Image (cartoon, rainbow, N blue to C red; front, side, top):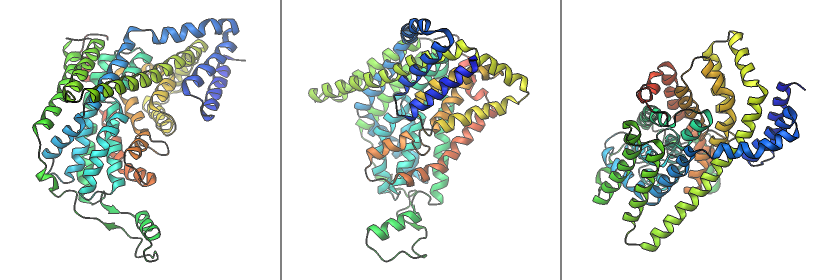
Length: 472
C-alpha cells in the first residue's frame, strides 16, 4: 500500500470515528496510530505513541493556555460584564440601534480579556438580550446579535485559539496575539455598522412569517391567512433613545477600568517587551484573581465558590484543549512521516493553480467543517495539512493564522451546529433556534467584508507583529 493510500485510509477512519461521535482527540490518536502501524510497523507505532503525546504537551509554552483560561474565568465571575455593558450602553444611547451597538462593543471589550467566545456569550448574553427586548428587539434578533458578537473572542487577544495555532504551527504566539488586534477591532466596527444599517430597516424588530404562524397556532388566534403571513413590526424603535436614562454608577466605571487594566497587562506587556507571553498570561491571571476577590470582598464564601468554579472550569477546558493537541500530534506525525504534505505542496505549485484560488478553497473547507466540528478540532485537523502548503505559496505565516481563525470563527454561528447559538439558547430559554440562525446570516456579510479586506490588504494583519522582535 502506498503512503498516500495509507494517509487516505487514516483520514477515512478519522471521519468514521467522528461520525460515530467518538471524542475527537481519541479519533485523532486512533487513526494516527493505525496509519503509523501501516507506515512503520506495530513496534515503532507503540514506541512512538506515548512519546509523541508527552512531547506535544510538555512544552513550557503550554502554560499560556491555562493561564489565559484562568484569567477569563476569574474576570467572568468578577461580574464586570454588566458594568461594561451599562457603561457602553450609555455612550451609544443616541445611535440608531444603540442598544445593539452597545451589545457588540461590550462583547468585543469582554472578549479582550476572556479569549473564549462561549464565555463572552454566556456573560454578556442574558443582560444584553433582556435589555434589547425592552427596546423592541425580537428575542431571536437579540440572540443572533449576541451570538455573532461573541465570535470576536477567538480573535481579540488573549485568544486561546490563537495560542493553540501558534503551538501547532510553531509560530510566534506573541506575534499572533498582537496580529489579532486590528482584525478584531475591524470586525467589531463592521458588526456595529451592520447593526446601525439594519436597525434603520427595522430588521431586528420585524416579526417574520414564522412568528406570525406560531402566534396564530399556539396562541389560539384567528386562522392563518395570506394577510397574517406578512411582516409586522414591534415597538418601540430600537434606535429610540431608550437608554438615555441609564445611570452609570461608580461601580460600573470601576468594573470597566478593571477590564481595561487586565487587557493592558496582556497587550501592552507583550507589545512593549516588558513581559513574555507566558509572563503576561500569569500576571494577568493573578490580577484577575485579585479583581474577583476585591469585587466579592463582602461575601467570602461567594468568592471562594467563584474561585473554585473558575479553577474547575479552567481544568476542564485546558484538559480538552491539551487532549486535542496530544491526539493531533499523533495524527500529524503520521501525516508528516508519509511525506504527503510535501508531495501535495509540490503538486499544487506545479499545477499552475493561482495561489488565491488555493487559499479560497482551503478557507471554504474550513467554513464547511465549522458547521460540524468545534474550533479546536478544526484547527488541529487542518493546520498540519494546509499551513505548510500556503506558506510554500508565499503567504505570510502570521497572516495565514489570522485568516484561518477568522474563518473558523464563522463556524461558531453557522447552522446546523453553531456553538454560540446553542450557548445563547442556554442563557435565554425558549428561543427558536432556526429563527436565530436566520437572523445571523445578514450579520455574517459584515464578516465576509472584513475577510475580503484582510485578503486585499494583508498589511492590516501583519503590520503590528512585524514590529515585534521576540519569538515567544
